Length: 508
Image (tube, rainbow, N blue to C red; front, side):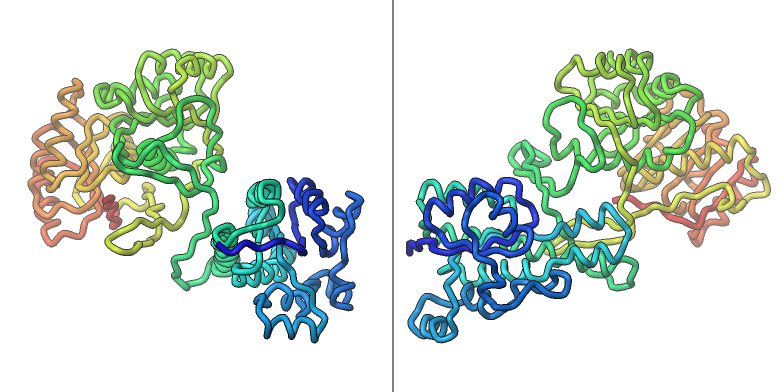
């Protein structure tokens, strides 16, 4: 492959971390260095010769530094092919060749995350740097491009092992990385400007990625794109897997609904909530959640909305589980739970759920508004002659949250702020109800006085008939079936209350 020797370099970077050994190595190799502004000052402090770009272009840095490198004498030296016609033009206009371009862009995304000051954000849109990256990457057959500080180690290794020479494969790889950097940068800026508009465009800039042990199954590879550390402090445990991530996401979405409630614990298995309970203390909430389905809890993901204390930790410690998520852990509780090294303990910084969500389908991607809607007592429309009691209303709202986080078709049975039965992922709503009733009975719950929530309407009155015969006294559903009246009539005839929300919560 064609080997090229680096004779000159343009260095214009935001981050200087890791730059010093590169500059010293370039000097050692006799490379002519051009630079501007803060980078030039940094190099001068190293007592290494550096030529100011202003001396090359005969123009100073102008417009508060907005224009420094945007000049034919810079871009000509980068874009010129090393062939006779271009070389003649370089000589004619006294433009030196530039063989290496080192850039690290202004931290636009970091600035957006740290401030709402639009003027400050706009000033962090790098123009010259992106232009340098694209120009050098386009001319990769002759020019080496280093598009971010992430590539500093790679460049240093090339300089040390190849003594200033690079082959086409080296330059092609760096060009690939360069266009990745510039495209991600453009997407981040677009998304900032697009926020709040009606322009639905699927563009995401996600830099960080973690290679997972494997995907959903051991024969599948898996990669997570995102910033896990932004949401969690990982306090203990083995590497997080694909399935862990899916369950953690489901747990955060569920507990978001209870983040301001009394102490609440939830147990999830394969993204479905199999135990949820609210109680005066966290330990009581844990015990009530576990009682919902103590079999499915084995190997599950646990989540709560309060700091885990020692008493609660001692109760949890007896059970095998994959992940425990909490806002915090008391020191003695953390010490106890951390004794088993594989347990994943996560301190959640915020029960944040993105307002837009997406998934891959067929040969594309679907994006939608995240289902952040959850009904309050004011949203419940009484459909039957009998109104639900205050206690039933509270349980119906609790059940509505639970059923929203079960795979459709779904039914949730609740009594005294405890999920006592659940049916999910069934081909018919009747199947889901029968599953929920069977689970409740297996774990010894009395259905008399319980309430039922459905994620979608009842196409026939069969579900309320089955529920009524089991002693369920109040029902919540979205409504909207052409046969709603038949379900209402049954409830009226059997002293049951029914409310409608007008909101369906399918989950596929």
